[in-house]
Image (cartoon, rainbow, N blue to C red; front, side):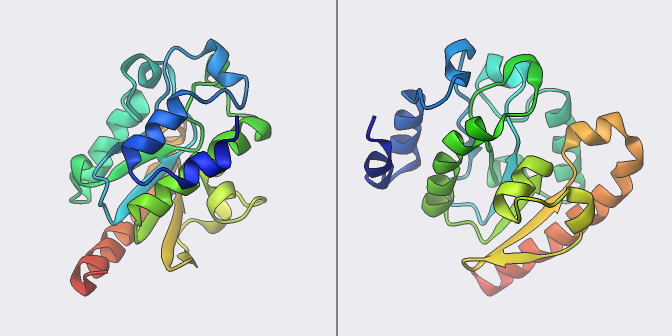
Length: 197
């Protein structure tokens, strides 16, 4: 499949999603019941990027709707965000077997779709939820714990890393720093709105 020129010809999120649904660039699609492309406001200034869909996400075809998604919804609401105002997606669009992290070749195969999603949505602020998103969008060798609380900028987009909600469920001690991160995210988002960026 000559996919790169095809992605460049995608001028809307729907066109990009249609191409993504046909993707067979890695082995994940073979055993995946459904592609979980992303959802939300396609004109949002804020994009959240996770790692990969889990079982509930695959079942419903929506990102962050399982236990981690329910916690994310609570955090977003507490920070003053409405989920429908944001755009939420993952690095990998298909569920890895056993909910494992995507391997590098799998994440690389899907990353091209994320890049085009970012180009089309044009967010001013991206939140990396977890290490995989952080390594793809900030630096390939960093861990969330080393860079959370810092603001990076690439191509005029501010990027912040925080813990994946699933990590907060496993280790409640990470909830306080994650909440601090979301307070920073809220403040930066408000600045974007005030400046009409």
